[in-house]
Length: 293
Length: 110
Image (tube, rainbow over all chains, first blue to last red; front, side):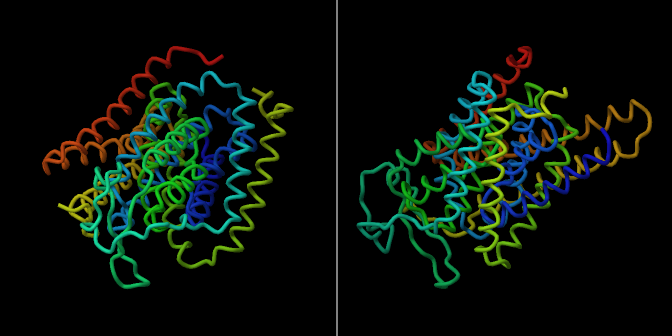
């Protein structure tokens, strides 16, 4: 282990997690392209290291969301059955799918994420408004039977707001896909979680951000244990990346409060489109750094 | 019994503390191993430093599994057996994934 390149990895991870965190995503989507395109790390190893970074981001920022009463842990544990099963499928598929296919998939996820970032995020309009008190609702849907509906403290309104969880089966299906993509590509899979939370489950944005952050740790841990046991995780890379991610996600949480998102958003749309182009090029031409080893 | 919860219940505070503490333990372990490796020194020291970094990474990977276990225990204590079973299912998937990783360890990727 040489100190100099690992310091470089450490600094890049701080940046990826801080800016990713400010935009409500894990840093994995930037760490994997960085490791494979610029550091000559194999995709398999980069994905495994990035998974550790995703776990570190989740663990480091979960506490403040939990203490703020924003995380719906009941919704989280129910959806985690789907995301961990998806991750398990992803671990199995990772050995079968070809490298060019995975690179194209990564590029596609980058492009869709970039497009998603240009859209203003809002939960789907609710046709039947939720009752003011949870006890007034007597539904027979899954979310009601599992008692998932809850309240969260809204600081702008200065009171607790009651919300209703909808269409759980559709949400579970999207979450299975999110777990699969997360394990395959070493990312947080915001791409599928945003429609799951906003369109299927109709959670308030603050609740979905907190719950998503809480869930991704367990989702990534499911593939993380497999990659760790398989010996894919190189401590020389994953160590500095994880440490940088913890520091970055703490800084990112501060950024989120201070910086207006629009310019940052535009910058990241451009960065993600650029990374997608390089990933596609690597997929079709073979990347020069890969031939060295 | 209604589904709404008071913000930051006992379980939520407990999970927050566990994750925060675990993050500190994992980060400090990795940092110690990293500093040791940077100082150079004998080959045995370098082997030890890699092992310490690996242990720190293991702390991070096991931390979410620990919080699922914690949730399962609390759900059992609250007689919420349905949710205890859901948490147990999540834990079981993680255990299967670990077993799968061990099995795959011998196979060289194509």
